[in-house]
Image 1: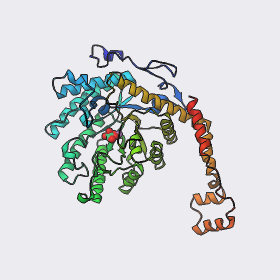
Image 2: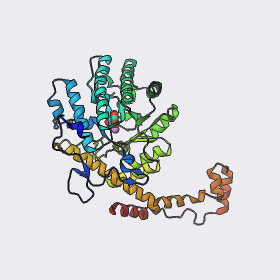
Image 3: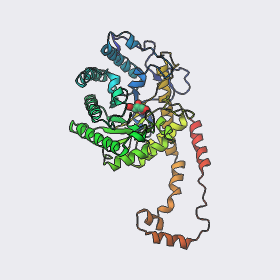
Image 4: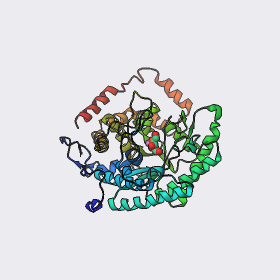
Length: 449
Ligand code: XUL
Ligand code: CO
């Protein structure tokens, strides 16, 4: 590691390697809860959490919003002679940041890593020039690729969608881009490949054939999967639900919608869910609801770790800071068996007015601490057993006798009705759900950190 910096230009010269110092530390550039080597249950924290830095927000986004110009001057752009050199410097800065932070993974879109060329062939060449550099940097630093993806939403050609575009020519260009992005992901040993819906949705049904667009999307995904498998890709494919933005109605609305889509088109063997906290909120769901729903279908895959702003109706992509939310999320994730190919990708950006060079570090440190604390609380819920024990007991009437027979499909509807008739009304069903009791227990764990 020390060799990695030798003789290199540093883009974050004042920032040391971030260390764990514990909850009492008042060093802002230190972890308070994330202690990578600490064992929680059977695994080390770092292996439970599998943190990834998002290339797009951290090294490409510059603070621009619809009302104002850039506020985050990127030094790696300033000292470059052209867009390819800027991309190289940006990559050096990214690997410096990720290693100083101590995250084990990163995620990227093709266009985050390399600029688009004048033709598909030139774009591919540019991307693979940067992929070769990333491969070397991954080897030198030990940082790994969690997942890759293609940006099918920024260029104007995708204004009417990519795989759901009414023009076949655009769909074919999207395929060319995804093929190259899959090749790049394979070359970099990516554990997964993500499809976020981008502009796959519609603004008005007056100009849209919804069924046709969904059929095309499924055909496109199946063909992309077949290509990747043929190339030897063994990783996971993820669909990332989002209800709206940029289109009025995104086809991958929420987890339940995506599960239905995957099963309807026979894609559920290869595709899993990448669940983003802010997208859950936009769909009117709790983050943990989306995780639990994916887990219940056996389709939980990965997480885009961020948070929304409950009083805003858009994707604010803020860094996680809410222990209540991450505790419930990690509780769902642990019960789903934890991450295999997936991880916690910080699809989050610092605020427009967070202009100190250290702010990007502070944001990630806070996010990692918030999830590490969430993990410890989730493990405590499980080890202490009061909450899961309560839930188990709540369903215990289905474990024996007629309830157990019903659960395995051995009772007809008449059988069920006869049991109901025989029991009479009495006090059946007048049983406390104990929500307040359980919330109080959870608060005890949270405050006892
Ligand atoms: C957009 C979003 C994307 C995907 C990757 O809301 O979440 O950054 O995660 O394309
Ligand atoms: Co995302």
